[in-house]
Amino acid sequence: MPTSVKAARRSFLKRDVIPVDVTQLHNIGELLQAFRRTSIQARNLGRALEVWENALTDPRRPTIFLGLSGPLIAAGLRRVIRDLVEWGVVDVVVSTGAIYYQDIYQSVGGRHWMGTPSADDVELRRLFLDRIYDTYVDELKFEDTDRAIGRITEKFPARPASSREYLEFLGRQFDDEQSIVATAARRGVPMFSPALIDSSIGIGLTLHYAKNRGKPRFMLDAVRDNFELVQILGQSPRTAAIYIGGGTPKNWVNDGIVMANYNFHRQGEGHHYALQLTTDVPHWGGLSGSTLDEAQSWGKVSASATRAMAHLEASIGLPLLAAALWDRRKVWQPRRRLKFTWSGDEVTIERPGARRRSSHRRPPTK
Image 1: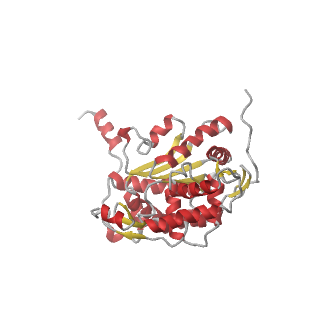
Image 2 (image 1 turned 120 degrees about the horizontal axis):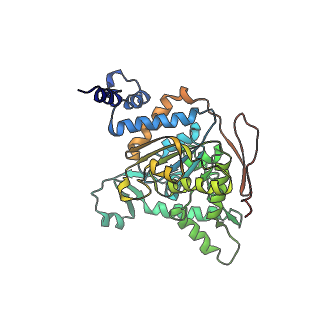
Image 3 (image 1 turned 60 degrees about the vertical axis):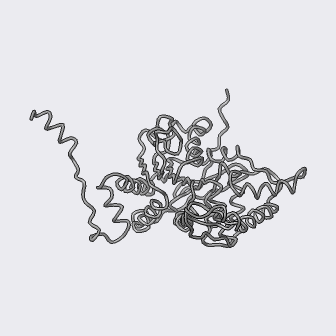
């Protein structure tokens, strides 16, 4: 065998795959550490933990965005997501409206019930039970939740507001320690939903609209969401994006980088850390399955970003990641929170150990 071939072989054969020995593991953190020397999606999940921990321990204190989509509450992940907010391992939450809604549904007494995907759906309809794959929810309680949201919205000032301001308001209406929106509001973690009306929260807002037609009322200002997002990005020396699923939250947080480059002189740097759990695949060309490498071509993910993408269903992958973070909390604790101070549509962020400042700038004059 030629020497050049031997040298080329050695360049590929540097690290063995190490079989997982479960008898030597003491917790989930050790399991995901072991996954990093395996293959397929186990290795990708182990790599995702590494990316998240790198973001948590970076001395430049990145702002970590958590993007959520899919039936996560129905899957039993409400407490997991709430804990991520409570622990301070995420700084901003961007979600579909459905996840916030089903969180509120449980805060007002709704429940998710174990069912079966082979149920008679016509019979379920007769009984006013809705099916989310193998989970049942109560349509009558959904209606109660819609009406409760409509009534609560009557307390909001009759003016335009971003989803961030409105969701913080909603979160402060519920005394529920297990609630995602209540925990985020209490902890000062901004919540956004760039497609809020595409959810049952939108039904509650429609009830509010119908009651107040022709009168001053709350109005959702979606473009203000963009303005608020780019200010957060503009004040962040680095950012990390964690996507559970894909959809609108992923696209919106990534597009924020483009907007920040235009108006906040971010100098073209995308997310420095990025990870995603998704069941979608890239070859259909859709956003949810598009790779984080592809996002580099848009400048949304930095050319030097630490990144990982695991093709894994969230009801499995997210609890494993969260449990591993908790088991390995000595690696990243303490992590002091960002303090967001809002004045209308402008924000000042106080970063731990940094002087308080605002980076709001007007768009450059042409």
